[in-house]
Length: 154
Image (tube, rainbow, N blue to C red; front, top):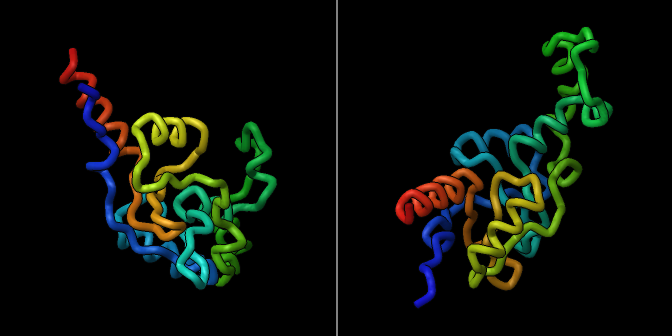
């Protein structure tokens, strides 16, 4: 008898963001959803990326910040950075979303889900049916379910 799948029980409904949505509106929807990121879709409702906490932070701070191994020597206050990049609030999320191929089809395996989380720095994995988003699985939910399953075995 094969072990039961844990990932399929973790699929959550999640609102999709349109790729043309402004960063400020997208952030508001992410906060309302209580998820760390949301799937991004095009005009045909096909998955084209994800936008979340990480992408927002990258949009808000200058691009060179990602290249630094240490930013302690940068003397700016947060308010200075916010004032300088406040214009990102009106930019479309398509300019900042993660476009890596990070979805799984609805018949995914737990191993496929684990591989996706391990090889991509994403807080969610969209679950798709024919390129349409049917839900998401969060990294945190998957972690907690794996931990519980391990302790059940021990």
